[in-house]
Amino acid sequence: MQVLAIDGMHCDACVRRVTQALGSLPGVRVESVKIGEARVLAEPACDEEIRGAIASAGFNVTDLHASS
Image (cartoon, rainbow, N blue to C red; front, side, top):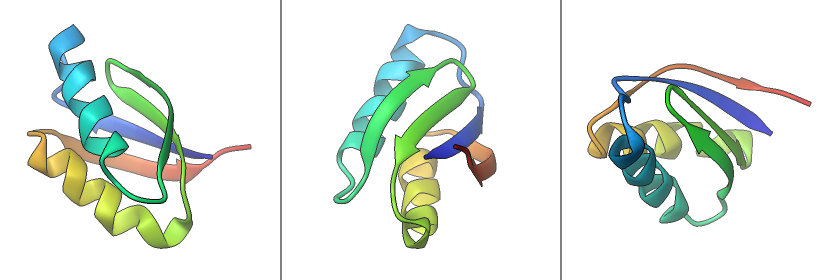
């Protein structure tokens, strides 16, 4: 599981935008999204695609790491 710290999320609409952005990526399964954080199942090779999708939604990934 990948844990993403996301800067700039302030409300439920932000959560929906991030959820939609991540959900549109092939090979990425969204486990949970809350203000400031997302948890996804994805291959580490998807990291740049994940960061790009979050940026396209208007937010910034400040940390992305694997979690058990």
